[in-house]
Length: 169
Image (cartoon, rainbow, N blue to C red):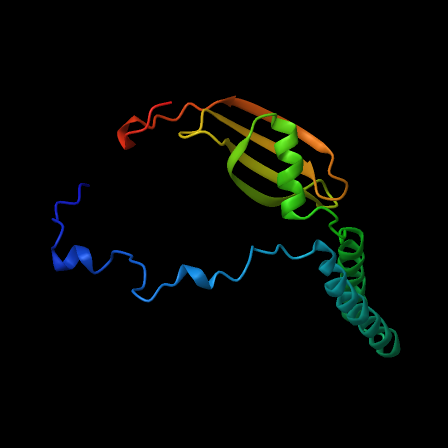
């Protein structure tokens, strides 16, 4: 269904986003910091304490429900400890490693922290564009966030069409 309302129509304009008038870009506070996956061990500790409490109460009162809860909480707590890696490769280090892997000068780049496998091993996925304007190359690199091993790398000529913006590739 096409939107036949025109710009300037109050019904249409009330839903548009705009930046605040007092936006001050000089108030930049720093780069985004991804939390360490090792924080899962805090949750694992809480689960194991609750499991011990449920087990103690269940054995004293012969409550099978509490014993079952203790087993479940114990399994969940143990998983949090097994999957609670301490990430050694930060975002900046991952971007540097990805730049080396693609083999072209990088302009814009974007990093995403993901997990792989049953134990949720942290992995960086880095999308990179070449430094020329408009970017002639793009690449995708996947890195292990624990040791920096390049798990996969793909580069290609950038297929995006920039001509409508007055840029030619």
